[in-house]
Image 1 (spheres, rainbow, N blue to C red):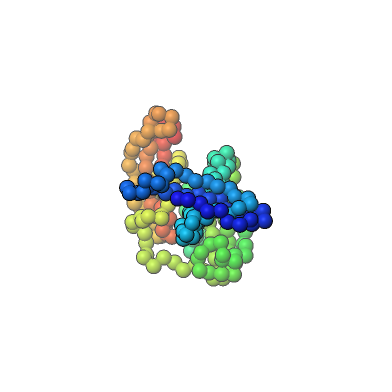
Image 2: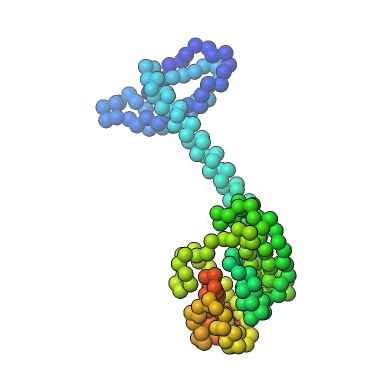
Length: 244
């Protein structure tokens, strides 16, 4: 490909020219496939009689430049995230239809301690329930001496209740559901009391299983599981042997 000089452009930085042209089988005068890069300051070079080639090359160069800097920006963000500490899992919150009934389960039977109980305004933008501008009662129950981790939240709407599930009592889990696992003591007595609560659906009771631990050892647990009246799935285990 021959380049033809154009008249003086008055010092305008015109183009970064990047082009690859393969040599055809009958084209003995064309150079071998190479990259041409011309940073033109005073003169604009275009292919003789091939303006379409110039436009195509300019578009290709622009696209390559965009992809290069976009990838550089993404790499910078990824590197900055790698330097951050892991995110802290503080709390999971259950939306419940009857908060007093839920307290009988999680406070009175399972033994969690109430550390927060407030009525708060709820705009509805953060929680996609379809209910807006209402009042909600929010309760935090801790399971550990450090109330910043291992906290269960219970939330109910007061003047505009959240619609209940249409599929009735839960018996099967689906993708998107979660499992709340609790370790406890005296699990048989707790399960006996849970079975007296209306709406509790016992899934398993009294199973004994041994699992590997992250430390390379094993732990044996007395396992139980149930759906609460609002469909939340709970595993309630007691360690028999080993440590979790």
